[in-house]
Length: 264
Image: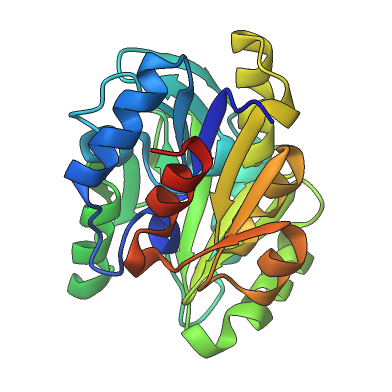
């Protein structure tokens, strides 16, 4: 098996629970990939600017950010998939009418958050979205919108996903990485569509790709690649989807699997 591209989810996958990774150990793997023409991709629901910061010392890293809605490198945004204006308006209206929900609207230039959110939600949002702007009303934002990121009660995640799907309709896809976090993205956009764009751009076939994930927003990506790997800590449906498994994120499962795969 020849691997020419490696893609990994971040939270619960590449990162430990305290949001770090072993940079020295990864450096060995990254250098091997670079020397052997293997592309490394951070494929995450997180903001492009946050991902760039995580890999500031690894300049050849590519990014499939915002659950596939933005694809780029450190130096250039290759493409974005934004919402139509009517879907944005409908989604904002639905979110405004849901109790126990706080949301972020994620744009090409910045993420946007209402000024009346709780301090704790703003602090958490600032970590995941380094480029973030507080606004009075989301309706007034002038930016290309990539997705909506929503926080709801953890034990009601599935219920809120069903409600959002019913209320917004077929123009969107409702995905979760677990833990009360829900993303509303375009129905035709996911991490696999981001990898498919890179497949064409880099002339790399899907069966020459390896991907790692732990949550529901990784499923399309894991199905798309030739070598899909579930983290030990992944949700049951991820284990059913991916043919391979590695140790959990706190044991640097992505790095360990790559060390074994590349025999380094």
